[in-house]
Length: 124
Image (cartoon, rainbow, N blue to C red; front, top):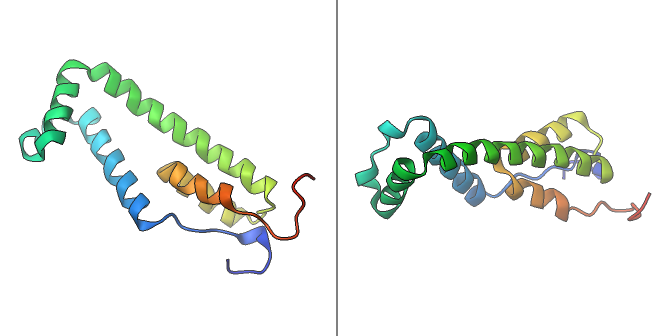
């Protein structure tokens, strides 16, 4: 935390979660939007599973991809509410939480939910 007050509290998600979520969502996007370009045979069991899902259950993948982004959007909006509830008032800090939660979901939101601001009562 850069300041002593909670108005600018921000923590980055761990590198593990950033890489895991980015690679997973990137692969998911690739298989949904450009399935003909995925080198399934080079990806071992993951490639075989992805090819099977694309060939036999593409609508589930397609709607699941949109649902994933709807969920991430709702998580990001919830992060803004949590920021307000925890006294994080800096607009730039709230924007950082929103963007990070939008892209990395619960890996970011979990950090915000764990934050306990000092000197604030639980109910105000």
